[in-house]
Length: 627
Image (cartoon, rainbow, N blue to C red; front, top):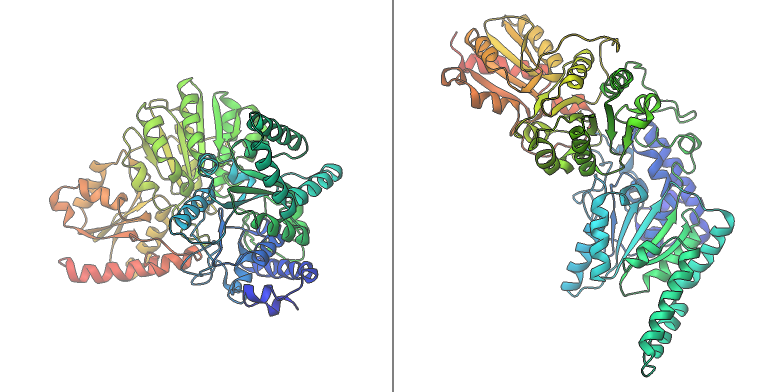
């Protein structure tokens, strides 16, 4: 097998171009085999196998910088850069990250995991290179979805202005090329990227400009005519107008063609260039080709059929939110659902199906989504904005300036809050508590169950006095939901589920299940616990918490978030001095970026699983609390 010979990019370059298609097939087979067991981002990675091979065949990484956008498509990149055997551990605890990481390999130019960053990184790298008077190539690989992000346009604007030598690969996996247009575009791209053409073009233009009196006019006329003619045949006029030379479209699964174009463009040492590459998500694995969205990020599955191996048919928190909203929208025509390129992930497919005119997917534009919702709210509509916690970080200013400052009744659904498992540092939703609880005017809720999430959505749909945020975790619910009814919900009231005089367990949202498990373990050791469910971060039920703590010898707070700026810190800062002294500790994640791994393993690793917390409570009570 060819793949067994690849231990570095040096080995890749020893393989003939004619053999690279076979290598691509082997890599796809290897990726599908591993991801069917480990889970991961499959369809995007399969789509860029050929492109990745061509990039590493042409460029001299790590000297040349290949900068990936998002990074969930870098499985082939990892395999080709000395991590073939390690790839078996992808996304597992203490294994390879599912995204580029600088500490993992010198071939990973930057840590990435969020969208639309590669162009800014590439320009910064190119400017730094030029200021340091070094010579190497900078290549940014960005998808068509990421290019829609506002940050990409900000970067393109400066790239066109600065004129530094860099190459942008636009990986377009949403469109196909017809045979005629595709053949003509391919021919033109071969011609205009060729060295002979570019020498002739440069010298001809220099001669024309030297013509006395009329040289500049003739030059400008010919230049505009060329761009107009090319714009008819090749869809790159936008980039040309921004000062970025356009090449393409190019078939992203034709490795010899890709190598030829990359080699030609590499030799053009002046100014920014963009190569438009057409790929197909899921290429080479039929289930992923047929349903690329489902295989975008998937758990373990049967390789032969593509069917997920998870046997849990219960709804996820995301599906509870989506189904509840769909039901509410059928009754209330003012309800609107907004998401940022995460329709399926946030459970809003049913909403779109039932209320298509009131569903808006704004693409990878979280900032726009929030401000757009604010304006809708000001017109009397009831917008619900559903965004993963990790991506909501990109819109903090909008939450403050465009929503809270004007006290607009936007309903914010903070999906995937807390630890999210194998996607790791860039995707954990650990910071939303410390961000949103410090923004005035927000009501901030955290359900402990699917039923409670449903009830909170019913409440939010009828609350018009300001913004509401609801954080909920990734994962399946344990209860059965009737979406046509709800229980009354009042924010700012704790629920006391059991009473014991030794220690109070103050659990936020989904940490209630851990708290109840701890209570049972403590009971076996002769320690009685009061379990308190806190489902409202703002307004905080301080009187209720005070009443509980006055009747217990000690207390612990539990939250699925970062401790710094979290709920435990907030509670302690508000307590009477005498009650503050009863604190044993705050349970949550430390002030560091949390690695990847399944949730159970991460909870245990950081000592916030039930067994670890029970052990710590017993130890601290024996040492610090009078008998």
